[in-house]
Each structure stands twice: as structure tokens, then as C-alpha cells.
Length: 299
Image (cartoon, rainbow, N blue to C red; front, side, top):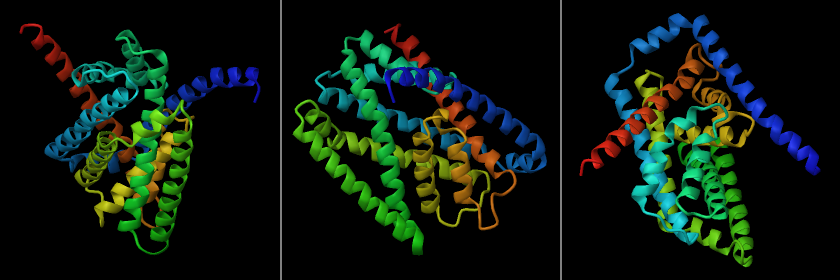
């Protein structure tokens, strides 16, 4: 692909993403209208306490994400206080819901540059964060599937986990040999970084599994649901044409949860509606940041 083709693709991709986002929203509205009775029966069974737990577990993952970012920046020679990075993370949460799904990341990057972090280190941080999110989601999902499932699924999951580790070892070995990237290789292996990602994905998988339970979706094995969630999120993240994996995640998760008879009526919509729970969780965290900022002005 030459320079002109790359520029054309970069200008067309955002249009495709926004168009797909709008199309998916319209689809879910129409889907809800066609399956309204089924959806109302699910909503009627929802527990407010259960939804609050889902939101709390999801919101707690923000703290671990910022802990990982703090450690990564320190490894890149640009140490910044955790409190400052947490404020930036919370402040930019509303940008997640702008068309395109990238503006929370862009906003954080802009704030970091404004706080004196060089553009190169900001680009490295944001790139490594995305890659680590995909890597840990995929690896933990496959490893957990190897434990939770039986038969062919277990063998495939364990095989892919081994390939995942082998490929990563080769990449890290290559990075260590390059003076320009050796620090990145050491940064991603820092205990604080990988523990933050493991803990964060455990919270996110727990929040989603609890959400299905709250909606009275049949769950025979919570570990299978958690593994399916992690792998489905990875697939959504790899689908670069879909903002925040919208549509890809829902379909993959619906197929994983449904029985051999196919996707149950209303299930696809219910899984898609989890984004509304996430929105409320993010809005609550943002409001907490506003209240915290106002309170600290008086002390």
C-alpha cells in the first residue's frame, strides 16, 4: 500500500466506523421493537442491587488501568503521580461515547502532552496499552477456556495459549535485542503492569458474568462465561472497523452463551444493553471525579 492509498484509507476508515456505529444502534432499536415482550420480561427480573455490583466491579477496573499506565510511564522515563493520571482518566471518560470510540484515548494523550510528556512517549504508552489489553484479554480467555471447557474446545484453547506464549516470547526477544525498544519489552513485564491487567480483566469478566446472572440468563459454568467474555472482547478489539468492538463482541458473546439451538430471542439485545450499564458506570465515575475536584478546591 503506497502513501496515497494509506491516506485515503485513513480518511475513509472513520467514516466507515461512524456509519457502522449508527447502523448498529438502529439495528438494536429495531431488534428491541420486534422482541419487546421478551425484553420486558428480562428487564422485569433485573435486580437493582445486582446491577450496582456490576457497575462497581466495572468501575473498579479503572483504578487498575491507571496503575498500569503509571508504571508504564515510569518505565518510559516519564514518571507522573498516580493521582494526576487518575484525574486525567476520569476527566476524559465522556469522550468514550463520541462517534469513533477513540476519543477517550486521544483526550488522555492530549492531557499527557499538556503535562509535559513528550509526544513520542505518549504514543508509545497508548500503543502499548492497547496491545496489552488485547494480549491479556486473549491469553486469559484462552487459558481460562482450557480450564473451564472439555473436549475439543479445551484442546484448541490450550494449543492457542501455547502458541500465544511462544509468539510473544519471540517478539519480546526481538525487542530486547533492539536498543530502541528494549525498555518497552522490560516495561510490559513489570509485575505492577501485568498484575494490573490480570486484576482488571478479572473484574471486567466478573462484572459481565454477574450481569448475565442478574438477567436470569442460564449459566452452567461461570468460568466458561468469563472465558467467552474475554475472547469475545479480544475479537471485538481486533475488528478495527467496529468502534469499541460494537456488534462483533455482542454476536460472539451471544453465540458462546446460547445453546446448540442458536441465539435465543432477546439475548443479543440483552448483551448489547450491557453497554448501557457500562455507560452509567462511567458516568458515575465521572461524577465522582467532578465531586472530588470540587471538594479539593475547598481544602
